[in-house]
Length: 379
Image 1 (cartoon, one colour):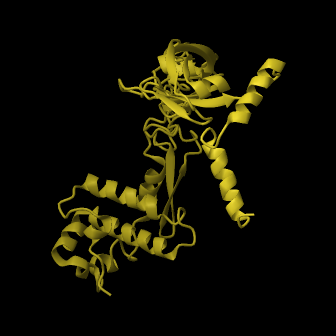
Image 2 (cartoon, one colour):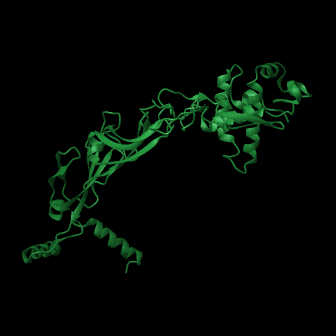
Image 3 (cartoon, one colour):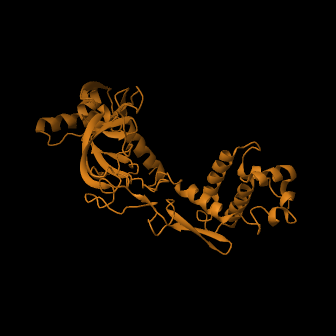
């Protein structure tokens, strides 16, 4: 069976740069990795093809040979018997490094990892905030108090006592990890001397015990824009936990939830409100004043013969659309209220109305019982 072109496997052009190759490989590896597709033989085979293609094309000499001779360059012992080295497999140190970076980001990544100098990025924090529907309509600036880790003032975040500084770890040379060979494999693990930080503190700061950060309660201002919805997430960059030993701070994520409203229900940018209508108003027609979310009032006209469930649309009276000058609509849903606790006079008048009512006065009722009669064969 003919082998697929390595460039087609990675879905890149033949002129792709080294960076473009790496990006394409990472993207495809995340999709087809066996850990994400357990038990899928096709995905495993696809992942192996991707690894072989990338291992070949990332090496300038192998790529030049492949561009000139294609797959034949690695057959019959070419380049050590196949793409990737003496045994025909990809170099494991580069392979594992690329896979690790694909799933967890590089050493400077956002997932609380360490920088190349061994300084750990602070963790991201989450804060849940409930706001009212009115707050979501108008927008607001809220103050929140959160306990979090901040950079130690005594040591300026280094973790070392004032007047001293951390020294490079002699075991790993500041890399934070050490490598060892096991057969054909090159294994990499966290340095046991510095626990991955790349530095050793001989005289730790007494205030933070060498961590480079302390816990403190902070007050922050959060700007909530008009039009936010339930579940909206607001990111405050650098307002999370301080990093270890001078590392960059994490981020703070504000998750908004909207409290229930006494009058309105929200659906996207539209608002819905149920309004009870007296039976007489529904029958004869009329109007009433309805509240709006901006605190105002608007008059709603009720046509005669209004039934329960009928909706009246008030254009532009809903919620603002986030990052837009447009507004949703407001819908008034009528609920016809049947009078209760009738006086003798009211009952007499209703009885007179019932006595003179016809099918034209109750078309839905007449139609329903007509269908019932047909259902039972006209009996």
